[in-house]
Length: 398
Image (cartoon, rainbow, N blue to C red; front, side, top):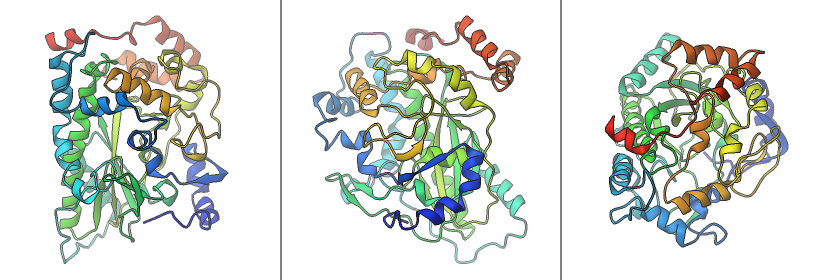
């Protein structure tokens, strides 16, 4: 499925999703254009001299054998080894089709290993069937599951051929009308050690988990006779899909805040033609809270996160055009990653919604934060030591 005929189809898609956009808090402007995957800042690091540098190349190399530990807590050989090991299962999937110019789960769909059964099961109760599919996803390891409609606006105009980082056609077959979105919670104690290579293990572990989970659920659906295609960061932007599937709300730190885990989640998706009932987006009060909170922007070392209200401006080509939202400077952000030779999620760590939610105090905070007393919740969070960085060596000892 391609959005290459945009904007000729814009009025139809805009009108069709106007109601659900409003319910999700998504605001589209007249100059909207689907995103070109080649312009993603990670892809630009390989072809755009404004992003590419010796440091960016060293950043990618640091995830392989031969990495060099550096000074600083959380960047020892043991920390880097754990981070890189956490990615190992995801790497097995993503490297399978490199010779064909595909990096599965990142620049292209996960390759399908299971054929579709010739005889499709008869679904008499779509609500019950949707519940059963969600139960299967939870069994395989998904922490949250939602369903929404295919929305071509969020699909990349073109995907990237990783042999030369040129543009090529997306490879999602026609006929898909549903998207299953799954959230995968990151380890709370590891996230508390950001910025560190050790903390990066929380990210890699969930990419490896979701590679397996997506593959298992795709196989389940295909053996029932439905077409299904697994996806991680490839093919389409996952954040708007997660919001539309009712899993959370968009925040100043560019993340989706879920009531269950705050911003501490990774998302995956499955495109399918299975008869699933869609979930409704929910707005509990994240935007209202972010309007008075700037903790993520204050904590960003390179000031890549925005202040003020959401705006419909394109910071540079690595951000989507025509969506009114909080938008980060991706080049500044990735530049800091490259200098540190590891991912940074300070903005995730300091976010007031980053809590384990296993105590009555955390649940009370959420209730107050989503009420008209949100300033009290922010004051309460400011008085706490919740956002302080944990010492990486403490994680190993515990």
